[in-house]
Length: 171
Image (tube, rainbow, N blue to C red):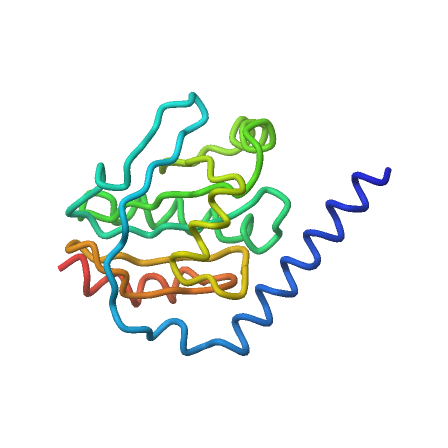
């Protein structure tokens, strides 16, 4: 019972931080481009993936968690966008900020058409390194084909917002 209460409290805090970040830090979306650093993270099978595997693609990197309602709300839109624009060079990458078991259970019930990497505590540090200075979950980055971070979005992002950002990058 205590563990369930802690999870609910953590989810509410994350939701609040995401909403606050969205309202108090709107300029984060318009930051100057910066290079995406190299990093490695494992998938559910333990296979390490280097971000350079997707070099030359437009990347949408989403830091998320299964206990985060806004994160779960975004996923169907990300699946649809991956399906719609994947053949034009768009690649979504999900970085789960929790343990392997929780992610595996969620993925067993949800058909996601893009790679999910396990970030855990290291994923939180990576998100901070990439500009998530308010520890927002979800946190989404858009990277152009040259490896430049062109958009940082703390909190929930809509399908329309992402489409507006990625469309010019795919041409």
